[in-house]
Length: 208
Image 1: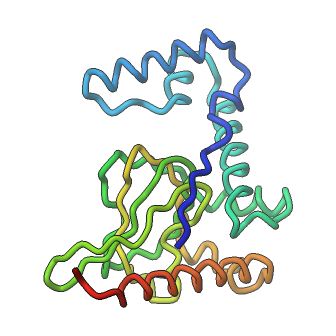
Image 2: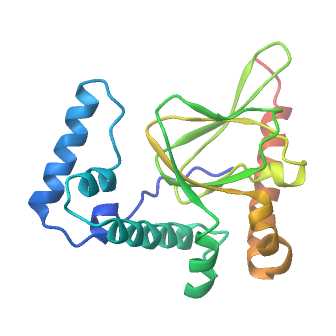
């Protein structure tokens, strides 16, 4: 599994027609919430609640950002603009705080994620509780792909190393693309095979 240090190229605010001072004020409020120990509200939510953008403007910006994030993902990068717009409707945004485990080894969870921002650690846990690091993964890579061929059962655990933004979709919402769109299926299988081999190589190493 290859690491990636690519970062999200555009923040949500760049998809909204608002002035820099308005954006700076919203970011400041996020910082204040974080300093108080509260969970910071998404930037778009702050702008909407302040009356700086309408609900339609916010939802349009989120859709455009989601399409751009999926376009950067190697699995979906060959799709046309119309195809990206269609498949983006099957995804939703998820924010994961640092240190949070969002995929649990051996548990059923038929979901694919695309990392939009942040870094995650993939690891296995042995029967005696030993933590085995597999890889760190970042944007714009998919995560949770191995379970697609395991009946939705997770083959490893994944936790957020830092504040992470993800896109998520159920496997069954994507099966048409994985099974009937050759260019998507080929890249998906390439990633699955590469990560399977990398995991087997790590697991085959003698324990220290």
